[in-house]
Length: 265
Image (cartoon, rainbow, N blue to C red; front, side, top):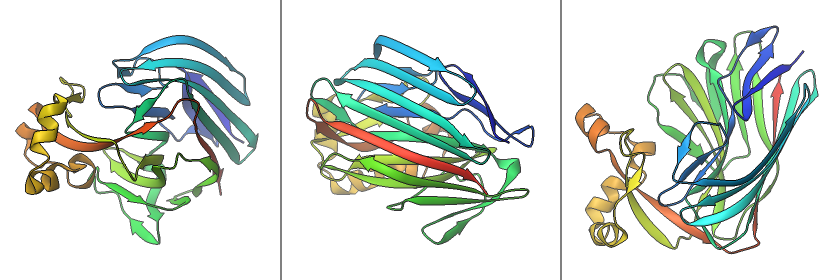
């Protein structure tokens, strides 16, 4: 029987056979400067305009209007426990003005101790603490467990024309992370961010990013570096950690939506 606990605006615990198998789930997105997380206490450089949240033992709903540095949107969350083995999650954003997006993500996190390996795009991945994003244009991720298996699958989606849907698995320290994600396929600008805890993914001035990314070798080194090939040098990773990302502008009154099912098998 599935049971959840809602804390800090997200599904914070999920019990299977009376054992909590997850770390907090949620939703996240970013523009060039701001990072928004549904989980209360995370994120930066954004402002909540209004917020309505209701939840029970089986249902979680939220309606949140957020002003980012480069946009404004209304977010609607609808998560449900369907039966003893299934959760369905839906997140929809409606842009209230032209808005930039680096990505649009529904997040799942599972404790490493319950999972033996992950499978995505017919590739089997064992946990090695690489923190690499094993990302593919698929609609399903399978997690092989010790007592049960987990399948995460996309039921429905609304993807803006200049974005593309992907899923990834990441073997972070002590956990498996699965993201259902939209990213740019045709973008409006490119940004270099300083991806450290002290800088909080602060972007370089746009003119400086534009200048540096004209150098093809440098762009090749920085392009989604933290996702594909994290810096091994601890000093660089801690104090600088530069990475380049694409940003897409989504017009006012457009929708982005994920509807995703998580099944305990």
